[in-house]
Image (cartoon, rainbow, N blue to C red; front, side, top):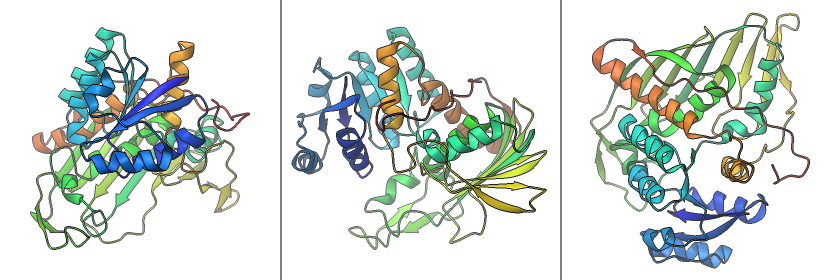
Length: 364
């Protein structure tokens, strides 16, 4: 039984706390800490967890096996590096780091210390994407020739209580939401070989209309309209479009195009469906039943898989090989845009192993 220490108890922490406490039976919560003490106290009141004075007290606790890093993106590097130096394995919210340079340093240091880094998203391990993986692997759409992905929204300032960091270093639609879409594509099609991108910030300032900061004007420091093209090692080509600058769109989340059909992939920010398959003999998209477990919000699934691998000595799916490759893809879109050139990627991880249908929910 691996014990998990939470660094950060913000909005996303609730589902992690809920699932580790009630779903995943092979990990347990060691305790939590947060710079805002009230957040940690709320977690203690709801889940009865231990509250550490700060991250440093947590890192000194020999009973903590894995640090769950749920801080803001620009804080990921410092927290993960401190945990590694303290001899802890780390599972981080996305992205691995705010820059590729940070990712390189973290992966290298973990390797030197013989420690593991895992990371979000783990949504690709859920029933929706895993059913799509089974469809592709079994040849139901033939040879994959291409893919497209779209993440279109108007940003977070109309609903998020503290949206400013989405427009600062480590933020933007690609680093924020790109990991969900790219992790799904890499799981389905394998690693990316070459990319090209175009990026811009459509608006220099944004107005917060959500409480409690309604009326505050934000300076935009990162691109908010990013288009990327990808050539996969498999020979397939793909496009991805992410933006915080559009009110609405009528486009699919992800589609995979094959020589014998088309696959409509569900929202990669979720674990479930619907999965829809088009075969020419049918002439229409038909919903395909989910064939794996974890269709509900199962955040923590990747963490549980990582903990299991530490017990068995095997590999795990939401690994630093995947999170680093995704980070390299995202940064390379921006690099390509700045240099007006194609970028060849250095990392090329294998596709993660497909999930196995659980005999007992919550035990991998």
